Amino acid sequence: MADMHTVTSEVPVDAVDRTALDEVVEFTSGLIRIDTTNRGGGDCRERPAAEYAAERLAAAGLEPVLLERTPGRTNVVARVEGADPTAEALLVHGHLDVVPAEAADWSADPFSGEVRDGVVWGRGAVDMKNTDAMVLAVVRAWARAGVKPRRDIVVAFTADEEDSAVDGSGFLADRHPHLFEGCTEGIGESGAFTVHTAPGRALYPIAAGERGTAWLKLTAHGTAGHGSKPNKANAVSRLAAAVARIGAHEWPVRLTGTVVACLTELAALQGLPVDPRAPGFDLDALLGRLGPAAALVEATVRNSANPTMLSAGYKLNVIPGQATAYVDGRTLPGGEAEFIATLDELTGPDVRWEFQHREIALEAPVDGRTYRILRESVEHFDPDAHVVPFCMAGGTDAKQFSRLGITGYGFSPLKLPPGFDYWSLFHGVDERVPVDALHFGVRVLDRALRTL
Ligand SMILES: [Zn+2]
Picture 1: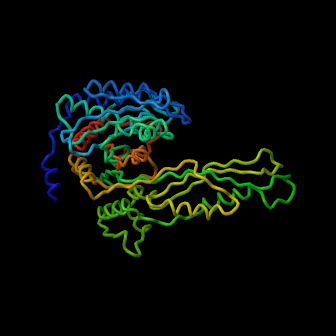
Picture 2 (picture 1 turned 180 degrees about the vertical axis):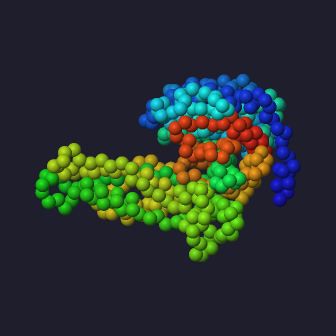
Picture 3 (picture 1 turned 60 degrees about the vertical axis):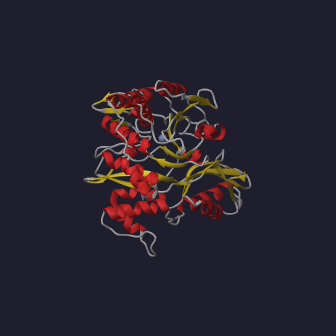
């Protein structure tokens, strides 16, 4: 508790000035105008965005380094010196690439970075050039004000998050671990944005976990032959049966620590005292009563496996000797062993399966100092905020950095007005962010990053 008192009484002076508020908008627009579309398979070029960020870090007196595994796929890393040399370092990371945008579907040019009626438009406005811009604006404000964060802060802007991370955080973790020396915790993508679940109720979910990735390839072998003849070893039938079993499987509920904490807080907000750990706890009944807030946990109460691609055959009257399918699987923290055993059972003896891509699940503590400071930083600037922890259904760069012993939180603060559906804008059409939301984010990040 002594620690708690020290922190609360040491609230830093607000370093955010008018310039920082202007710059976060300018940088969000500027980064959106640099097209860093990641089409997968190596088709992306982050270099101009990385140079844009590096120039702005250098102008603040930092010494950014540009790092590439593949030419054009550029990452930027810089270290901000902290006031306490004995403190462990903190990583703050954001990716520079974006998913593709079909301009014809949009109400604005997705790469214009246009600011219209107090809103910045374009691909990356929420995922996640906005956050990159906030981090740039914050560290430059520190330089102007001559203030230091408590801990050393390593700023990393990464390539390739929207594909495999092989040219981005994976490469940095494998080949440049020394740049992250001393980092024990990381602040990254997704979290601390407003989710309006009822009139007057603003939730701010902070990500304290991620499901793992288990992308699978299924292969069935059989006897090739004429389509008019009996065939007891038809690869297509074998594969189809396995895929149908996987699709129909009802995965058992497994509540992780983060999800239990989330459910408990959401229930308490609605005056429903529940103990998700108690015998006979009825999850479906609670989800039904939580309304829209149930979306924060629905995807993370169990493992999942969704068939997504099928391929077999080359002529209607020829039975092929082989058939393949792909399944998008996601595993809970601690859930991978059960996932593997279940897949063995569901695929059966006639279908082989293997990992096409495999990433671990993550879970971060929500009862310690770090989570508390993140929560307080949001509450400080939005006294009506209800901060709750949540587990992400998918994954981020935090998975790669976790290999360096870095515990990750998703924290990209934005205060959004009612009716603004942040989740639908993620990879969505007409991605945009209000200027006010960026200003809120800069203030919250400044406070959180300096206090942590
Ligand atoms: Zn993203």
